[in-house]
Length: 314
Image (tube, rainbow, N blue to C red; front, side, top):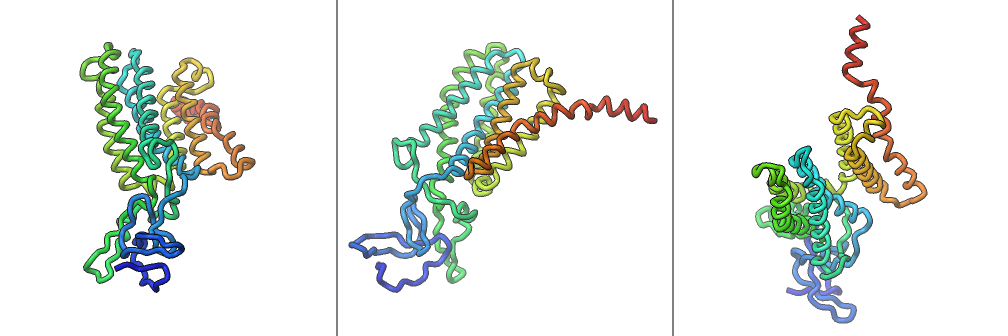
C-alpha cells in the first residue's frame, strides 16, 4: 500500500497524477498511492505532490489585477450608461463601485492562504494545460478513469471566483441603499438598472474564468491593448472629438482619455513584464500615440468632407 523513496516505484500515470507524502523519516519519505494531489499542492518532476510554497511573480499579479479590473470597469460603464446626463449620482456610484471592488480584493487576499496576510503562496504556472487538469485524467485500461483533477495553478484559478463572490455580496449590501437615496432624479425602474446589469455580467465573468481562465492568462495583455484602442476610438467618434480643443470642452472627456492611457500602460507593462527596465520603460512613451494619431487624422476622415470632395471631383 505504501511506498518509500528508496523503493523502485512504478510510473505514476497521467500528466497531473502524483503521490502524496504520508510521512518523512529523516531523508526517507513514505508515499501513498498514485492519485489526485491535495489542494495547495502540485506534482514535481518525480510525480510527488509538493506544497506550493512560491509567491506569484509580477505577471501573475498583473493577471489578477486584470481580472479584478473587469467587474470595476463594467460597473463604471453601466453606471454611466444608466445614470442619465443630468444625474448627479453617477460620481458617488463610481466611488462606491471602486470601494466595493477594493474591499473585495483586500478581503480575498486576507482569507487566502496564509490567512490574515496580504501575501499569498502559489504554484508556478508552467504551461497552458496547468489550467485544465480535468482534461488530462488518465484511463489506463480505457474503461476506468483515474481522476487527478486539481488546481495546478493554485490559487490563480479559484481566487478569482472568491473575489467575484465578495464583489457581488458587497454590491448587494451597499449599492441599493445608496442608489435609493441619491438617485431621486431617475425613475424607479431606471435607478437600479446598473445593479441589474451586474447581476448579469457577474455570472458571465464567472463562466469566462471557468472556461477560459488559462487562455486569458496568456492573452490578457493583448486583450487590454486592443479593447482600449477600439473603445477610445469609438468614444472619440461618438463624442465628435476632432481636435485638442474638443477634448478640453468637457472634463469628462479628459477623464476617459486618461483612463484609457492607464489601460494602455497596463497592457504594455503586462507584455514587457518590465524585465529589463532600460528597454521596457521607454515603451510607455507610446501610450499617448493612438490618441494623438486620432486627433491629427480625424479631420481628414470626416464623412461630410469626403462626400463633398467626392462630389466636387465629379
